[in-house]
Length: 108
Image (cartoon, rainbow, N blue to C red; front, top):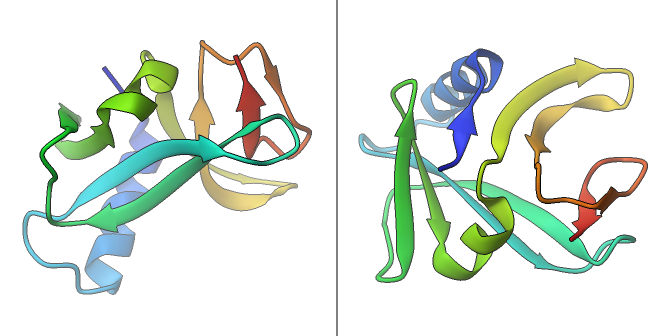
């Protein structure tokens, strides 16, 4: 399962409303090769699921992830930070053995 913090929930709802996303929109997360640690996180809003998607819901927010990325994201919590490194969604990933300084890439 992929979880969502209260801050991430509030920000996702706010952004989807401000971007006039269609009803039924959700957060799509994933992993792709790249970054200084080998793998990078992807996050976008979407409203169309795909055949290989894993679908979760936490705190009323629907999160969708492809099966391959899910292997890297099991147990991850999506959070939202307004810290010194800038604001944005962050991934708290218990599977990451190493992350880069900015937190946008990781390795397992």
